[in-house]
Amino acid sequence: MCGIVGLLVKKPELREQLGELMVPMLIGMTERGPDSAGLAVFTEPLPERQRKLSLYSGLTEEGTDFDWLGFADDLQSHLGVEVTIEAKGNHAILIVGTPEATKRWIKEHHPKLHILSTGRFIDLYKDTGTPSEVAGRYGFRSLTGTHLVGHTRMATESAVTPDRAHPFTAGEDFCLVHNGSLSNPNSIRRRLEPLGIQFETDNDTEAACRFLEWRMREGDDLESALQKGFDELDGFYTFLMGTRDELALIRDAFACKPAVVAETDDYVAIASEFRSLAKLPDVKHAKIFEPKPEEMYVWRV
Amino acid sequence: MESLVRERAAATGAPPVTGRMTFDLEQQRVRDLNQFLHRGLGANGVRHVTVLNPDGAHSIAVGVDAPIDVDIEGHAGYYAGGMNKQARITVQGNAGPGVAENMMSGCVHVKGFASVSAGASGHGGLLVIEGDASLRCGISMKGIDIVVGGSVGDYSAFMAQAGRMVICGDAGDGLGDSLYEAVLYVRGSVRSLGADAHEEPMTDEDYAAVESLLRQAGFEHDPKAFKRIASMRSLYHWNADANQEY
Image (cartoon, rainbow over all chains, first blue to last red; front, side, top):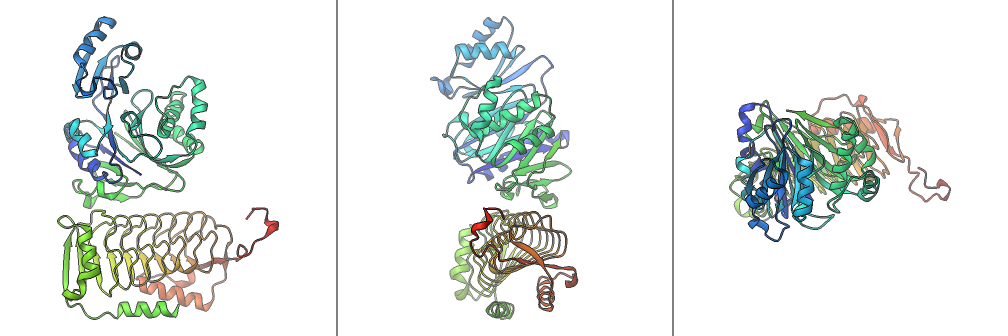
């Protein structure tokens, strides 16, 4: 079992409240996912040439005591250009102009440092702990942005570790969270690995995430990629995905895993259960519906 | 069927309301509510319980065994009214998965929509859903009557053994797959029937049954607009020649 939450605000003035609106949603899904939690937030974009990397040091020896400033200094002298870093305990957001060179350097010099996401819009946080603990650890309440994708995990398919928590990412500015379990993640992996697509965990959700991102990189738009997902991904799933300007939701043909949507003039909110939507402002007047199986729901910023 | 009718008559003929009680789930736990419903009614003479701020909580008013009214003033989560005996339970909003699952008697009435597996395995009583019901509505029903004002999702009435389902809207794929003796009445279209389900002519008895169920549910439709779906009973006996193709 797992819990999913998503929120997209329709009015620019609500972007400041994104985190505050979302935290009760995430905590509302604690019973569905008490072992880990995570969240991807889509923010104001960086300039065209810059990228931000969300980094996680919890799997290094130093853990939360990781020397982020020393790390940034070393990276800066290697690249010969300025980098910016903003650290929150075992997480940091690094802003660079050369993401590929940076990633190579990190893999070589800090192999245990985990790169959670890359993009111009996306910041990503995930860790083990209850949703309340994780939200407090990284100050989720103060997050701002246009939309976000969150997850609370009760592990079934792979171990309880920070890197197996959701959201998963692939490519740039794309993330996916999953409630359910896939039955063919290994055959998906065997198809993607010969194409040079590397996996970081043995988690089934990572296979779905990399499959969909691969389709979009091959030229599919989100809808075509999701259609191929319906054809290729076998198992039970409610998937919620975030792109730079969209939230997308799909459910398997048997609707085995729950989802409910509340929409007002101010927001679109998605959760596994109404429990997580109950405290949203004016939810009593929201249009509430259950997404149908094998249908695509895409909301644009 | 006679015993069902008797039980329902007993439920609707409950004595007039003598005492009311309100539970606010913002302040109180579902466990407090359910323990009161199981053990506290007699001592307090309460016949009508109102549940405020249900906010999608699970297992609201499960296992009630008394001819009382329970009003749930909002949206209920999983299993609302499950295992109900005798009580008339109303969900003013939407219901989560498994509403009225394994109901024995009484009535559960959902004003909004119901999620998957509504009325699953129900033995008796009446489940009314004013909006749509999601997939697997009435799966393995064993005597319950279900009336859906809207449409039902795929695989509804899967392996339904006894009871009746009235669908005022449309049905999805695989309606009535592997039906036993339950009977389904559909007003709208059926995307596809499941294995061993087929349409049969409506008899006077069927029209009377639909008319009665619609009246109990409070829906105004012409029984003549419904068609009857029942089992072909070809799966009742092993057929070695079927080659696993049904």
